[in-house]
Structure formats: structure tokens, C-alpha cells
Length: 419
Image (cartoon, rainbow, N blue to C red; front, side, top):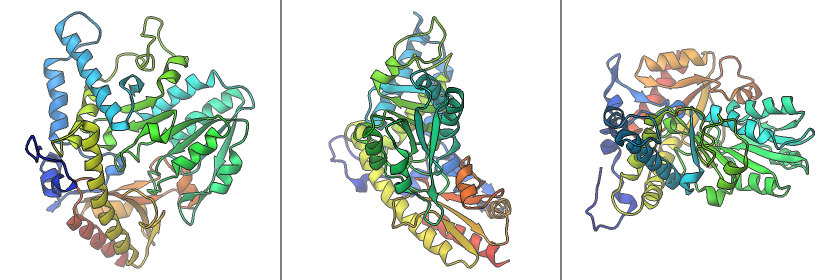
């Protein structure tokens, strides 16, 4: 994937064209009903490049062992995991000691909520939002019911798909101990103003937990600038395997009483990781980040990621604008969430009048267009839009999405709406 000589200067134009990137994804060669498959299901999980699978296979074939023992494959496993932490740390501008792994974002959030609950008292308050995936709602609601805490729910404005900031400001009080907010909505693509949310939390000395699962595939995170205390993401949303990743400020990871077995390590971040981990998944998460960074050849990993993300963001912005405009012209199609002129990810959700979302997705699949449908575990969003139980149809752009696929999708939806 190297596109420049060793001494060349990196530039945004050096990022490979879409056709070159697509060649790295074997899944893109799939044919369904004589149509080449276009994967618009990235918000639910992206396809995986060959390089990531090969790194995971190499680990399992030649280095597979448990950790911290005095023989070669165990020592090699320790090194591989540390390299994965370093890659994730570069990805977020964090320290490797601030990166913990887990089964998925949901499990990690429940785990963090349990650890934090020990320091909360009856009457303390937690602020969450209607726009969030329920993985950033249910864990906080659960500890609130167990500890006598109060959960304040910031409403979503259905007409815009954005948070009601007046309500947000009113919800943060001197009793607030934690603000849990999504960086971006997996259902509508809305990007939230995290700087504003963090400022509200800091004004009352509250902690900040960020669900960045839908955000990190589309925007390069800097946890130092963001000033969050915790941030969770999932590698399978950015071309990796099914594993969750947690950032936590080191002093917090070291001070919290995470549930763990007595003989398990006490030092961060291993004190967060219960039991034997998905080590090949850890390796794969690091490999997914290296895949993105390797789209250009020169500079540090973080510097290369900045260039790649800037270029890919520009490409996806063009695609999502065309998709929004094209679907807007189809009679009977309703779009949800902010338009492309507002901060958003390249994820668009819609409905077709008179056709169930399940049927829309099924009919599109017959045309080789793979889209997800339902509530995407953002059930409160669907309820507020009064779209239950069918929910939405969701299309997301990834690094391998082409303009031709966008046109196919617009044409497919138009055909369904016209029947």
C-alpha cells in the first residue's frame, strides 16, 4: 500500500484512489443476483481488508499463547498486545497505558459504570441523551436504579435530529457526576458538539464518557483536545475485527475499583481487562489502524492518519451530499437527521412511504445493495421519530464506497418508491 518513495513528502493527493483501496477488500468481489454487491452497511460493521486478516492469521498460526510467561510464544504475545495498544493510542492521541480492550463497547461501558458506581452516592445525577445508542444509556440507567441515582435525559429535536442544547444546559446541575454523550448518532449521522458538552460537565466538575463508536471511522479523535475522561470505540466499525476498545485517563483507570480476580494485574490498563482476552482481536484492532495509516508511506503513524482522514473525509462528504440530494428528489422518501450542510457523518437514514423498512432493505438487497434497517439499538431515536416498530433504512459510506454505487442506490430506492 506504500505510494511514495522513502524520501517523498506526504500529501493528501498521495492517498490511493478508491479503486486501489477496494482491491484490498476481498468481500467487494461478491456477486448477488448477478449484481456486484455494494456494502452500505458500514455503520453496523465494515468489511475487513486482507492485511488485517493476514495479521490475525499470522498471530494465531505462529504466536498464539497466553500472556506473561517465560517462553517465546507467550513473550511474542505480550509484544503483539503492546503494539496493538500503541496503535490504538496513536489513533486517539493517548498513551498505551490508557488503552484497554474488551468484548465490545457495550460490555466495556457496563464495566466502567460498575467501577464508577462505587464513588457515586444516592441523589447524584447522570446526564445522558435521547440521541445515543442504548449502550450509552442502559449501563447508566442500571447503576442509577441500583444506587438511587437520578438520570437526566437530554431530548432530541425530531425535526433536526440534533440535541436540544437548552435542555442539555438545564440538565447539568451541581449534582451531576457524569455526562455520557455520543460523539455521533449511529442512527441519524448527527455529530454532537462535544466541546460544548464537555464544558458543561467541567463547569460542575463532572466526568465525561464519550461513545465514539460511530464517530471514529469518519473523524480522527484527539482525546487530549476533547478532554474526555473515557472514550469507547469498536474496531469492527473501522475495518477491524469484533472487539471493543476503551480509552480512560490513566489516573482514573488506576484509581477505580474495577471488578477483577484477586491474582489479576493491578496496574492499568490490565486491571480493566477481566479474564483471558481476545488476543487475536487486539492484534486485529491494531492492524486495522495500521491499514489506514499505511495508505501513505511517510511520517509517523499519527501524522499519516491525519492526512488519510482528511482526504477520506473529503471523499465521503461528496458522496453523502450526492446521496442526500438524490434521495431528496425521490417522491415518497423521507430523510432524517441533519442535512450535509450541518455536522454529520456519511450515514443517511430514510423511509419510503407505504413500504416497510424491512421490505425496502430486502428489495435493495435483491439489487446487490446491502443496507441495514431497524432501530440500530438507538431505540429512543426511533421512538421519538414515531417510526416503531419498523424503524429506518440506513446507508453508510466507507472508504471503499464509489460514486457509481451511490447512483445505484438512488435508482434502487426510486424504483421501490414508484411501485
